[in-house]
Image 1 (tube, rainbow, N blue to C red):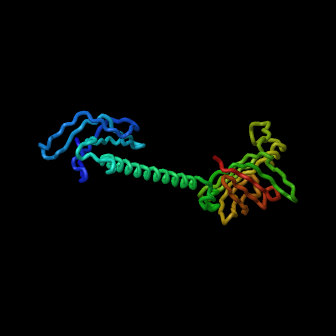
Image 2: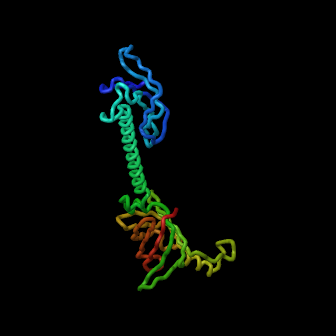
Image 3: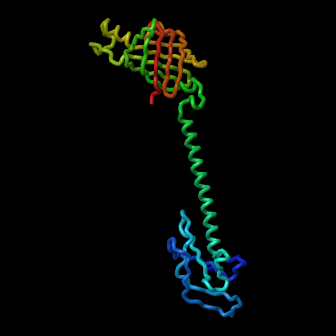
Length: 270
């Protein structure tokens, strides 16, 4: 069915849809049969079969499917001087409008995606990138990487150079710590209450554990020990300095249980 033609310049010019496409072919008109109305219907219009028409192609959606019903020499056919066929002007404008809208949505989509990636990165990044305080960042489980005591510039690795341990801070204000040498000798007897003096000594010197409550003020963590494998620590209060960078927690305890300042390094347990 012909499309409505609102062009006053070529009133007899009809625009019809078609599916006959030929890619990138020059604008050619090949007339087959011409049926003249001889003015009987008062319109003076002409119908022409078109064999080959250059398609108007949209890069993203393919041809638009419009061809002109006029051929060279017909009444109403535009000359080169009049800048060509109005149907092609209509189709080209329609194509351009679609391309502009599609390009706009394409750019908007990529912009939204980029913003989403940035926001997600900030949410998943370490707490410093989000401006969190130590109180917010320290919550969770931390795995021990290294621990040593230092006195007069001399380092002493109380739990060995590759210690094992865990430090846990929960949101309710409780803390639990366990530090140990990587390999402790087993008791000769399976009953832990029947160890030798040597076995007890090695365990006492190779393990330190306890739990209590904690509060944070700036970078200072105050721990009130409720119980500890070292009895002298139970019921006492310690002030330690901690710092978090990324997933690494470093700390210094000026009153270490071994009689000298203790330095520890943890990584967030995953």
